[in-house]
Amino acid sequence: MSQIHELLNRLDRVRPIGQNRWIACCPSHGDKHPSLNIKLGEDDVVLLQCRSGGCSANDIVSAVGMNLSDLFPKTDRHHT
Image (cartoon, rainbow, N blue to C red):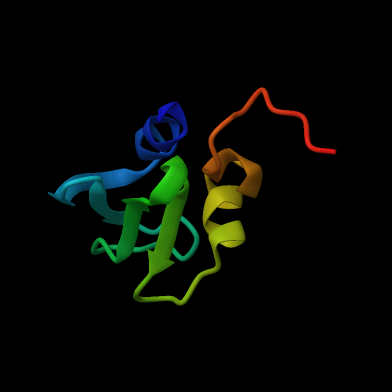
């Protein structure tokens, strides 16, 4: 679950809105009022939804210096 904490630490005005759910200002479009919904989904995947600017997950993570792959849990499994 460390990827969610890494993201939350890079966002402004973060506050919890439920179990494994937060709201924050969207870094992608200069949000003044929190409009970014963040949720820890199944298998610890981080889900993002900008409800104001319609920003993509890629835009959001790029704005805080992260990659889309950072939204997924790190695994030691090798896929064949």
